Image (cartoon, rainbow over all chains, first blue to last red):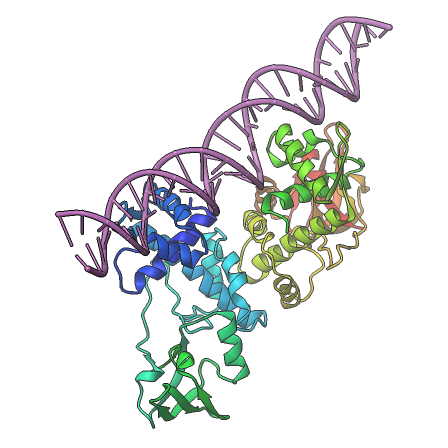
Length: 217
Length: 217
DNA sequence: ATATTTTTTTAGGGGTGGCTAAAAATGAGT
DNA sequence: ACTCATTTTTAGCCACCCCTAAAAAAATAT
């Protein structure tokens, strides 16, 4: 049985492992988890002992199949709970994270599967992230970043990369939500800012914001 | 902020405190929590430091107002989650306890209150226990133990005292459920057993079982 | 009233998961 | 190839929550 702390490490290594590099550095983990490298070393040894991670001194960490499955299970629970909170309990998408962070550690297979059914087997959470199935598999939607799109083209906002409080609150304030149809009106090469149009209004967004918006093909 | 362990102690002291005695003994707590008296002494000191309990060496423990409120909040969450599990996720009443035991520690005021509303502000959990309101208050239903009732009288099963797995499974097996109309057919003074009748069948129950069944007046 | 039993506390210790500070290994620049 | 800066690990320590064994207080019996 994995502890709460172990699960948080697995989740973090899983996420960092997705971003390109094979082995994840202890420093990267420490930063993400807001801890220290020395604490990470300790925990990573423990994960290796439990056959959840592969660890070679000074050479970073990767997940074993078991570790990857466990991480995917935690992420599955996190995202299912987010759907529950938003769709059934009137949470907004910028309020769900902290609570889902707690709920994701509840241990009960029946609970997860019944919750999944109760929600109608959702495929994506409120931020557009895919929900892994029981085997840890999910299909990545072929969305593209808005900066890659041409002026005049359009698409539907299906995913936001940053799901921090500040960013989601900004989106709320500017009336941007998942599912919105968006048309690219103008791109400014000088600072990378864009002018985009939704059904309801026209918005000027900075490059930093644009980096986090993904539209369906 | 209270830890998981502290909350479990508060809950236990709260329950034991209800049963008559003013101050609860460390041994009683240890037994209920399946721990040792020495561990209880340590924790109880900690609770006193945090102004959650009153503790005098060798004289037992009682809760402060703050402790009582905190305990009631945990119990409120436990019972609300039980309702959720049974009514929305197809759990049976003998499956909910372990999961609710985990869910009761999730910290989010909004979560509890929205869940309460989502469930239609239930007043009792699946075992007939009352759900405290936000202020920790609840009204005890004036149910009486079946052993106190006379042969020939009848009532509705509204509460079961023991909510252990074994007992609830026994009730399932004998087709007894909360809300059943029950008529007392016979009482046997020799061993305290009873013969009772529901809508569907006639059952012989032992004194040990009868002790745990409460009917509405 | 005193001896005995039971209850409760204290003392000391273990595992988890975190920290700081110092040491060791790695990798970059010359 | 070797020094220097950075990264990572080790060593030692702390808080939490539990334990066993021994001591102390309280309750009970004679």
